[in-house]
Image (cartoon, rainbow, N blue to C red; front, side, top):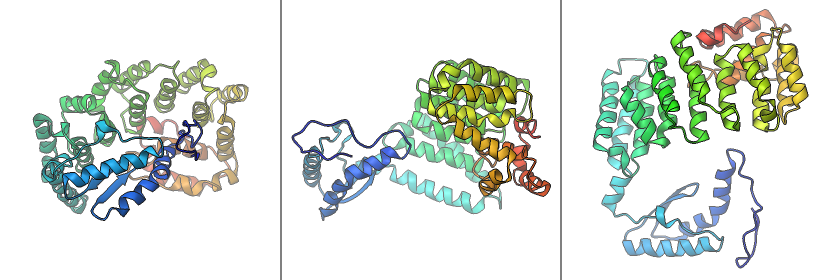
Length: 396
């Protein structure tokens, strides 16, 4: 943030937009004065999330006055309202846009699922979610107003109630509602048999629906999080998905390495890393990712070669990650410094542990300085992850 007189041109110096929290922080800092302005309007109620603002007033004329004054206030900071995203709605239109009735019903359904989950059958709730998704898709209910938010809520409830989706509905949601993809993939990775939809994901990747890096990474993250059986069918589809990710592009290579770090052999992972040194060594996140897969080579003859590659590449940030895993896998202080973190499970994930934490666990299990009882305790805590077909063969 940089103060400047209103009459001066904008200076491209300010808060960097690199880390995940920076845009949110920027929005809050930039709009605190707007919050004060809206709070001073006694006839208005408002709610803001980052740069999304909903304002409630009693009349259309009041709405127009507030928009005019709001735009003037923003102009002093050299920004304007986005007229294409700014609408004045009547009470009836607002109820339809924000899906008030639908959200009330979903609140009740979510409450029933929470009360009954793990205690009694969720058959009725499961059926209600499945019917709601099918009906909503058929009637176009998710295509208007905040329909996409209703769809995401239904997908989250489908995950909790173990509801199912047809292949056609899965594909349609993936194609037509990009904002719901993360929720859809989260439902998929928590499915009791995620391999049943793996061919649909492969077709979507191959058909070019993933036109942006974020979508490719969403698929890569979901694939690694899922508990897939080690079958020739699964390996074939994983291979096809890997082939669709461009290893000459930064995020394509990131996705390939991330997927390969779970599903590929150590030899194939080594070939991928060695052949793309010129790309990942000059990118901080990629070099940290590559160094982070060091546990895959511990206890193998190829570990010396991998260490030599890391040392020669001297990737930005990678050497510190390498040292972290070296300490974790060989010293008692390396383990005790993060032992509590490693032992903590994450019940929201299919394997009760993230893939990055599993790699840390793998380093710890190679640490000969850890007491056998502590090793047994680690394996007991993460028994679900260690029963994953693709993880269990990596355990020393």
